Image: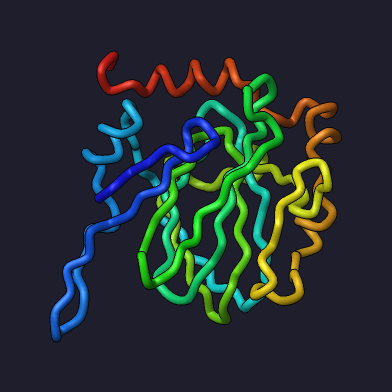
Length: 203
């Protein structure tokens, strides 16, 4: 598999090698050793989630308090989504910026987001099925959101997504500035310190 860091530090695109024949296709969509080699840290997976969305559904921008936070390894098993990583770490050189990866059943890519990064996606097809491997179990009091339509972030949804469909929870979530002013956001320094504590070379 090929792994490259995105324009947002500590987020990665993973492109697996596919082996196809007249029976179908085989691929490795997750390899802990390859991911650790690329990120320099260990990945302790604790929960797996699946969501199914109709075309146009937007989920996010979601994040969890650190430590421990939730790093996410995300792929699509049916349909297609445009997946976004948003840097919400106060003090980061890319604070408020985002990058995106197309997740579909053609290239079968995945995206890995470290703890403290915001995550969102928009479904480009009906029944878009997204599977997440995460590094902590869901903990409601420590889960937060930023509205994905915040103009300060400026996520761009592709035309083929159709009309955006958001939950009231995501629509009513604060913007980036409001969340920062409320002290909800992680900082670059605390995030980097936490990643360092997971460094396999130093453990």
